[in-house]
Image 1: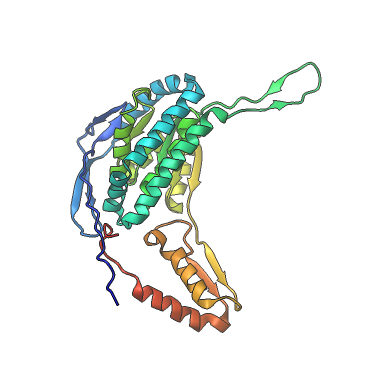
Image 2: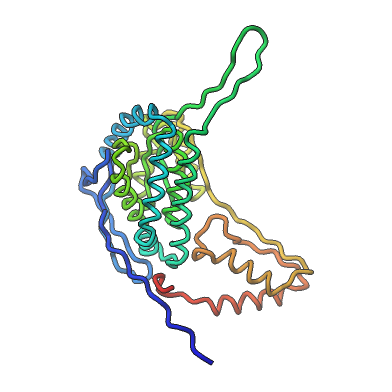
Length: 331
């Protein structure tokens, strides 16, 4: 019996961009603040990233406000073409971006390649949707014409988590830009590098007005500044319930900005007594451990009928013992 071929190891990417990205340029933090980024597999520091403070947030908001007036006035079809090109650039740099995600969050590179490919498709999807956002004509009594007109909100602050950085950026930044808004993207402090690389890709699109996309790395302090900023019109956050509560409160205290929160949950699986126990165990195991278990919709609770409970536990125990924890860059 022949032995399996040795695992292929993809090279780790080089880190190129660690500054803030404001008004189309990479700049240092005005207060000189930085924070370290670590490879969770080795524990080694891989980068020193600039941290956005209040002055940086204010500068980004000012740049976004000016760019918003240009971006919203642009033909929607043109905005769509720009987003489509950005999706193409993400796909063309798939291995680099996926490598940066795996470097910082430890997700197996094959999974990162999949999610970054999906992110490129998401950006192209919203590129195609940009010129299809439309209102309605509403029947009215009398000699009146009643219509609804959908317009962009303004400046959207987007706070994304560390578990799937590029995918989370695409699914939030994509629709915001397609609708004509300007964006302030704050990646998680654990995973800033892929967002900054995508900021670099945006500079390769001369038709994209500077200031439409800004990237502000930082920790919870930076997120709090965005939540409380009176000139930001919309904020979206994916993460814990506790932080979501603080964002909602800060938004209410400042300017009642619109808020979208994705706070995860405890998604249950139910295994009935007539189930194929081996298959059910495999499915439950995959549902819990996909992306290292770092997904807010993971199957984090499993209810099993008492008559098959012991067998189910034994099957999942075998799967857990066989699971390999190792180098995320091994394929």
